[in-house]
Length: 515
Image 1: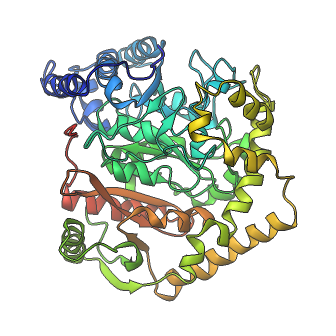
Image 2 (image 1 turned 90 degrees about the horizontal axis):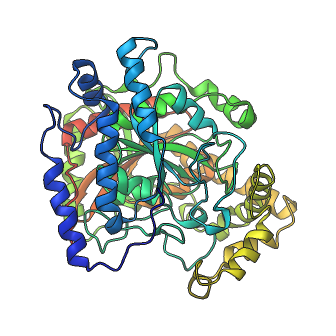
Image 3 (image 1 turned 180 degrees about the horizontal axis):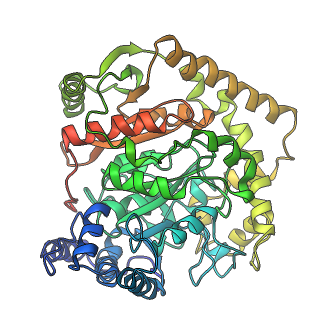
């Protein structure tokens, strides 16, 4: 079932519909509470016989039908989702395969993650509608192997927000404008917009997003969910519509850190189709997996650096008060906070033109996208030049007059990785080594912590991981998060800290759908 742009219903009617569904969803079914359900809670209900995968999928499909006209979180639902759920139920009843984990769990995928089934993979663009992928993306193969149910495709910023400087970071031609479920007029951020909205609004158990620079951390932060941006290469990018093989990563989004970690554990690992990156990062995967680091005392003894450049809130503001309370909580839980730290050359890192990120990404995008499109089994477009031409021919549907495609045109004018691009990549490497890595080494840090999304470029150019956790809500009810970041392969420590923080604060609350 394809989800289109919101029909011309009045804003108030949509909000009433959402609120009615919210009330209905809190009514227990045979003893199981669907609302805010976690993977652990679902698996317990499966074992007790109070829930089936089919019933769970039916709940999410019903919720998508009711909420999607308001939130624009989902582009398509999987016509085979119920069949997959029924198969999971039969496997559980027969004992033919080990269950638990993600078995029977509905997962929503960002629309740039390929599935070789009846779903489209379009990066939110009409240009790829009807194209056929040759195989599942690497992370999808791992999800299927774990027994997950592919629920559908989430809306996203079209082409991961790399088409234009003027398009909203949460809009696509196919999916429309995503809306923040907490404050409908607030920015839901992107590019993994629908993945974060759907997780927040209980339209799926968990979701997958992708990040080049901020695309998991930002929407997770703005929609009060937990998002994990893994070390580059920890998860395969094979079969994902790309921007940059040097920076792209695939990661989970969920309502709890535990849910996100369980998805991460299922999708990491070597992939021959992304061999160089996944082989290099495989040394970071801990024996015994990631769930072992879900420790309530995970803050104890951790040295955490506070980057005040990312806590620039007005005196007396809600954010300032909340973060001061959070720092006290961390100290009470045994963390050692080192305050007022600064990353060397931060202003350069945060300026894509100065850091070299802009130059490198434009060339990398053209090369990577042309390679991806050339491998499709069938497609209306086979190159970036074809996509540009498609947009020119479909200017109304793609809103070209309004948003343009300046980034596409700049990328098309590149000619590969030449001296300028090599210099830019070398500059980012040095900025990362002399910046975050040196800061962490000199101060013997386990992580740095930030209170806004500005740190994403620091993590992006170095290929570093980050985990964002709900931290609070502004005066208008709009969410904000806290981000724990570290060097490559530091996911175990980040998970310990993020989970312990979450359990100590329990900030997250369900969406309110306020205007």
